[in-house]
Image (cartoon, rainbow over all chains, first blue to last red; front, side, top):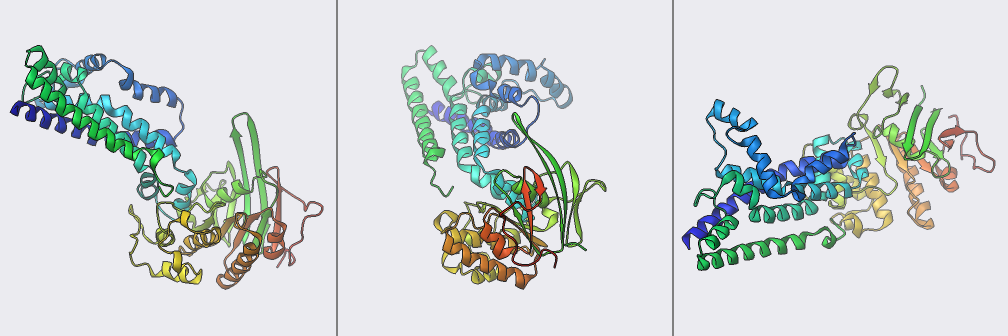
Length: 224
Length: 236
């Protein structure tokens, strides 16, 4: 069973990193899309949402093309820094980040669009700079919606399978996350291990969804 | 030197409809009232003066200080204009208490003032506006009159060079309106602060205006028949 705990720890590490990266990326892009109007905005929105609807294997293939040893960025990293991304837990983080990104981005965009622009204007007339307007007005008011999106993206990253398998493989103790370990256990006929892994995964996901539900915008009091 | 020297032009496009704002007025009066029907462009005019919207062309100078001049390429940011703005529905920050709202501008940087952080200037206004009892309340927990005073205090704490008010009494009932009008009048007399106020309420014009600018269809118009005259002559 100790392998299961290793897989759980790795899964939490990968999902944690992916969520942290998406916190910054998703909030920044969501805010930009909510506040700025520019030509091609709808197209960009669609492209950024694509990872949510595309088969994970297709994403995995795209990722191989980009960060694989022969890939555009992968070859460059290997040549200049000797870094091989493919089949590392960092590659799993990249896959999980991209797959879960739309959940944060969509939630952040919707949350920022709910913030009355007049409140931001009021802060400006009070002499507060743009950074202050964002961190003192927009972000606190959008925070609940963003947090709900973050938890969903964490859950999505926990369960990520297809793209991760393609770019990170299934190296026990290094890149074998829970969902991949389940697959391997079933394939190898280790039902006990599979049962245990499935139980751990289910409990983790239910816990995350319960937390996300409590933060859903509909349940926020008038104050927020 | 005129206290208010405003010339603004801006094309506003909204889906199919277009609206041209072309407003121009000069006044030596400290208290000027913008009067006109809703949709006339009053709120837009105020926003452009505050700098939270950009005119296509024009010039804004208040009490000799130029804030915007398209010919000279001057366009001060809203932060640099030092113009107090009281929004129509007050635009109080819903996540901050009354006291934090009033102390908002006193703290620079990226963090809001704490609920108990020292802010003597804020406390002075809280006292003056009798908000002590609700200082720790959130905006949705207080009355309309208290919200209006909070918004006013939040703007005044920055010691603005002028004060813009967008229908400050519209959300209040009649008896309260008259009292707050008198308070505002007194306050303005004490601070000697240039004041520009939007209204479509004739009583506001009668009580507060030293000069009236009538706006309709995005333009300054002559006094329409039946419109009230200011209490004092326009030129002072």
